[in-house]
Length: 71
Image (cartoon, rainbow, N blue to C red; front, top):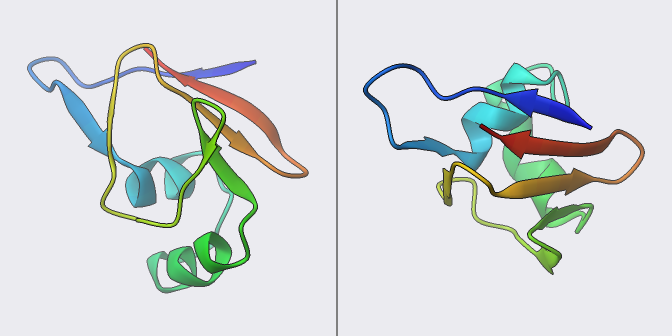
């Protein structure tokens, strides 16, 4: 499982930002399309909001790419 660390002083990262960081999407414009396909889950629940705030301990599952934990 890959871990993405929050920047010092930050409590959250948005789902769209995380997807770009782990190269699940090549551009920010494609985040919406990937989420609409239903291939992203946050803590086991389907998620389609790119602005979803993720906190330390959240796990994002991306079909075909595996899991990413927010640290």
